[in-house]
Image (cartoon, one colour):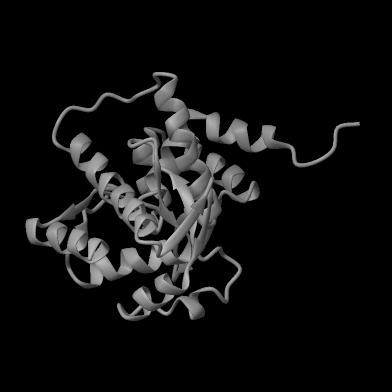
Length: 226
């Protein structure tokens, strides 16, 4: 008898090109309407509605209602982590979408991965945190040290309060463009919010690009390297 979770249902949905396009659009973070997702999938609204119902039933997306409008978002960070983890496999197999223009290098430098930072800058940040022993990494597991607690507390991030929820405080997320790890979990999300609050960077609308100013990038690197 076969026992345990049946991944074929989830795999079939993620493997559907229309569903995959919509899920990747939601990776940028903001919730989107069915009309906006139809544009991303290149399908009619009636066709997209059927796909959205299946994605919701499978627990991959959630619906937020505001007045008469319905907005769709990824169900939680676990879905985002799973999608981001599939990207290196797709890249390794040669399944790369070719896009011309400036967004390719911008996406590789810094982008949102659901609610945390990904890309070259994010990988460098995690590497430096580990070098400074603010975090300890063993394989794919991350642990916050006492030095790390003091460092983040001194920068307005209360890690004790963050650790009280169901979601992991810190975890490794495999970066699809760098093929190395960046920081996710509630600590990764808190750092991303700090970056935006300090106005070191802004999220480009309708994309996953996180655009740093020249001074913002310098301030970020100085912050995680000092």
